Image (cartoon, one colour):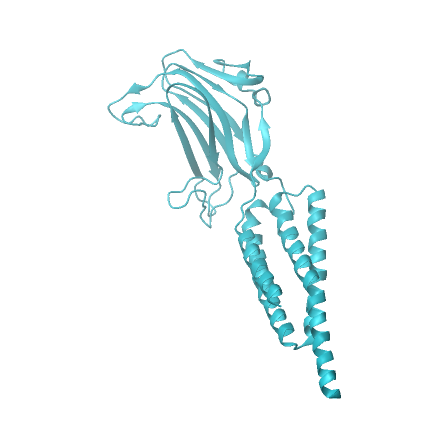
Length: 310
């Protein structure tokens, strides 16, 4: 019976840990420069093949500031499942200009105007008639550097907790990526990628809530399993113990089947995991221990009958 108690407590810990498991990140969409028509919008740019990929080349030869909007996305149903925007960039001979005061058009770093790749998440007003909130994240660069991956969080960067959001803030309605050059320089950009998780049986932003519910369920099952183990050890409440064990086995099989169906339906990790883990655990733990529990009650019944005969 100690085995059942230990297995139940272990299942409680595993399910509680599953509640904290973050959904795996994957590439949801790739936006090629041809489809975005950037070349037509900005005469100074062109699409060229490089390393087997079509990249966008932006060249500033006017020795004057240049700012262009590279990417604008407004599909709210896709944005709700997005976690980040990613892009690979390399730059050559991007001028770094010393300044005496901060120029508001460009981020100043140690008194210099530098190139800037900026991501803006446009969030609707928290109250009717309020102002739209723009969450900005920037990457500063200058000189010459080979390919480097840049990634921006769709949820934004908050000083207290990166990626956290105020309770009264909605999800972004528009995503935008801008490129700024203070003067001469050449920038190469690979296609922009939208990272996140594929749509599932519940939204991505609800995965932590579902995971928390799984953790509570695991704690309840762990406590009840411990009670079943104690009662079986003392030979008490035979009907309750055997019935509860059978119900746990049936529930485990049902959850396991649901998890397998979720996998075949190509649901994301955070959907099928919350079914498959408790389902397999319940089925294995209580199926393996059910014969031992029944044998324990039978042995106690035989001993009781033998004592009555004596």
